[in-house]
Length: 622
Image 1 (cartoon, rainbow, N blue to C red):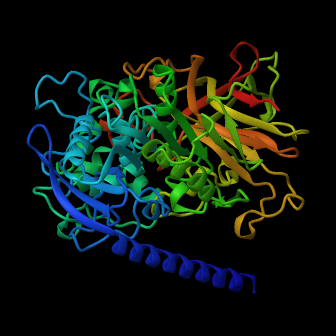
Image 2: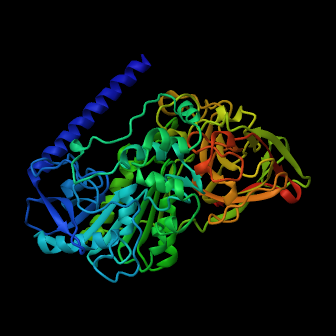
Image 3: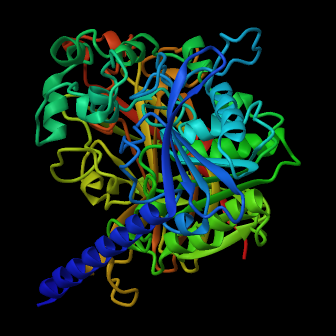
């Protein structure tokens, strides 16, 4: 009966959503005129742009721009989008909505370049980047689209979030507001395809098997018949049987995927990656910026913090805001935000964000409408499930504490006097899965999923605190400092911060969809580090077999309350497959590895005494 009720409820909600979308689509058709234009850039290249203009001419309107590599479809002046702007409230609010295929994608002219490097010194009209293309677009719009109020804003999620960030250096004077959301920011240190130098195999393969296929001429999605063919139901088995990375090019990509070749050729933080670090150029920022992200974003959890912190450091007088919620990638507009995976947050966090922050932000800076008195950092704390408002991030109201790994799998804030270690074997032929069960595509829910499946493996080291006698809230960055040794010459290290629920959660209630959370091990944060980069991403160094070595690295920030009666847990492992490619555990160029390069290695994690491994955290004070 309960399942039947849930199915009926789901059907009702789906029907209501369909009606709402239909109603919004009808509103857009009746209240907006759509025009399509090729906007010329300074070097003569023309970018395809769809523009939705309010039919009501009783007031001037600001431009709200989205630049994307994912198509501005539908194409044709009589074919309309079903929604406009960042969320459903914007169409009725009234803006001139501008959607543009970026240079070299879909119907735009020119050559596409992934994360196009920013050109600091523009000495001629041929010196172009995403900042100049945005500048030229705004300039053209101001001069050619009537009834505008002389202001523009830009927004975007994920890759479009990168284009929003890239609009900030040397911004057009009319650009008054920007909202990079889950912005692609650094593809070597923390977003999408590399985390701390470790290659995110599954995401890169699936993404570039279609996105990376070259486009010979401008075309629309219905004219695109490219993409690399492959079929699998079990991602773990598929990538394990695929073997070393060079087999992907041999069996699937050939030379057709240009950026895949770049990934394979640039295995360190060299000039190729440094040229693509947009954050280094976030100086003299004039527009107001509201950066948005999700703590449980499987793709770009790094970017929002990096953009916010860099603007804050380089532009102390800028109107700079950060919003972080309990969301997956884009969840603030793609879900209700009241749950994720098995975890409930007990309130519609997405709707609150849209009404209290997103619409007021653009209205205030682009229309002088209302007020925008948001805190510099608006943060949702999971666990306690409440919004907190801080004057900066990380909050000033924190104290730094250290969680030490102890003997016998225990964990505490006090350092043990006696040195010891935990020893185990890591085998690349049987890597630790990133999630329990069998999946085809990478799920997004792994970011909060139950980690008991990993805790049972002998190649995963588990450390648990005593049962908490009071709530503990962590807010801010995490730093893992491991003292390790290996019989190999290279290794990956994965550290996971976990909220272990009580053995009986009857008092707390059930998780989403009636999930029993008794003993649940919710991952709050997990991150990988490729050990050969421990002394710098530019110059990898081998481990000396058997030598105790420090491996220290940052994990993305957290905002979470470990409730009274719960335990804090840390898991340490050396693989996370097929999320991350396998480390051969030998010092070599992994991108050129052979199948027989992958070997077993014996690892030690040290604790106590002079080699006390730990996780440094920030405790939020009441």
